[in-house]
Image 1: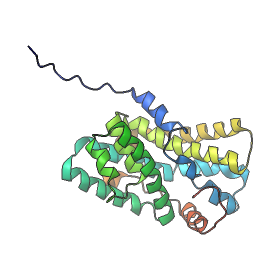
Image 2 (image 1 turned 90 degrees about the vertical axis):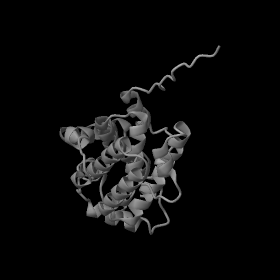
Image 3 (image 1 turned 60 degrees about the vertical axis):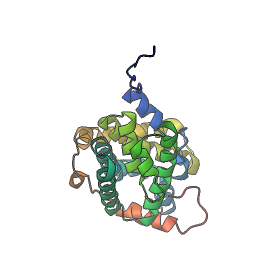
Length: 239
């Protein structure tokens, strides 16, 4: 006679393992299409000597906005469902767009999001939040996508903040080796310095609980460079 056996919960990877997986440049999400603004910056006259300063500048501006949005998306995905989830994520997208004036940067972010969501849809095919973000009717940004995926995968908020900052810095470092080749060990130090520069605010960023608390530290020059870059036909990266 058959007996009812309680369904066992699906095991989850450790948060550290998840962070390493999502930080891996070999992850099939299309991250190779962007240089995190480095190519436009170099075209505009930024010298190789100033690239570490450029990375630190992004870490203290763009990366904090992206990390804050991702943390908020994670919180929403963990606390809402149904129509409430849809409404809250839509409001968050508007807040992200207001902090990202460049249309080109918004387009690049949404393109990257599609890569992440395609992967997430394969890994968690039955998750409602992933399916919602994957809907053709939505223009999900990369930060919101990563935040929702973090909630589904079990990635903690502090690891999510560090992942956002690291990914941006590492993207610049990888692009640098293609645009202005140099000893790769040098760029590793640049990435470490960028990540260390935001470590004092990781705790506070990971505790963000409302949209108004998301940093609004814009980078107008980077936005302008991205818009100009979108008009050129000779480029390695979209932005």
